[in-house]
Amino acid sequence: MRVVHLQQGTLEWKSWRYDGIGGSDVASILGLSPFEDATPERLFVEKLDRLERPTNFSMRRGQFLEPKARAMFEVRERCAYVPLICEHDDMPWMRVSLDGFNAMRNDLIEVKAPNYKVHDYALNGFVPDYYLCQVQWQLLVTGCPVGWFVSYNDAAQFKGGNELAIVKVVEDPEKQAEIHTAAKKFWNRLVEARKAKAKLSDRFTQEVV
Image (cartoon, rainbow, N blue to C red; front, side, top):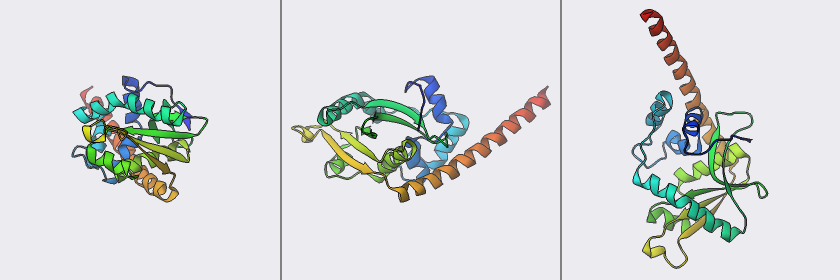
């Protein structure tokens, strides 16, 4: 993988995300996302026109709780994980913004602060398919053999030791190949659409001049 020296949340980082396929895009591309505004066509338009999706309460909550969940995971594992932005060595359109990476262990973490159903699911050792494909994409891009799905929920029913759920995710070449095929098809379609849009824009400019 190739490390990209950008800070998550900045305008430069947002621009970088438009020019590739990231982990959070994969579930939409595969049609697995349960969220109404995360359809394949909605994502296509966002990438094509560089439209920023408005943040909702759940997204803001996840961003707020991410550092706390990462810190709890680090205490349990007795090692540090740093957020990292990177691209695939050979296919730079394949991109990820990791919640945490440990170079010595060559593994990564994906942190979520989901609803109680997803958290309870994780406490029982399972990861929803729409999050699992995200972690598999991260493993594919980075070359890491293992990732950790880290779920945090501080609701009353999880107090007393169940606020943090950790599920180990091992690379799955077959699943990664399936995801890569779909993502590449989506990316190629987007590249062609951008070329057509650029030609149309140039033609309009020439006619106006």
